[in-house]
Image 1 (tube, one colour):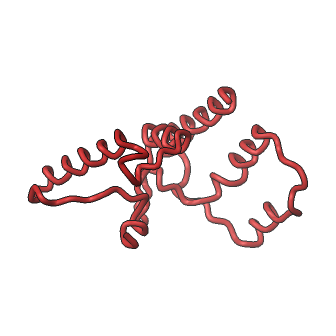
Image 2 (cartoon, rainbow, N blue to C red):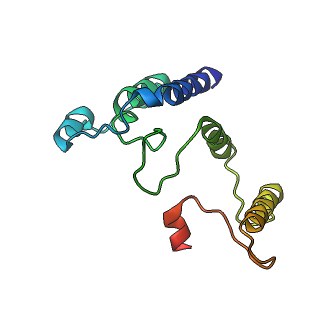
Length: 141
């Protein structure tokens, strides 16, 4: 796990370090993507290192990069290295903070942070809120 995890972190470091040297987007046509990805359903599992190599070579750099310093497109928030590490912790621990019983400390962190935002925006004490995974989920909520 460490070896694979360190490889992922190394890829993230390189990505953030070299973002300004790459184009903000690499968009390819459907025919090119079909040629690259269309294959029969695998009958066996694949080595995680090989999957990571394939993802790095063929998936992650065939897209627009919200992490790019010149990305001024739409809603996705720009990422940074600290946010990526925090995301890894959140996914790894898979904390569900939908109720106090499952996650009293993460729930309290959310309450305090929302209150800080309320204060910064000069909202009334009775104001409240919650964090969502993004704009679409916020609109749905």
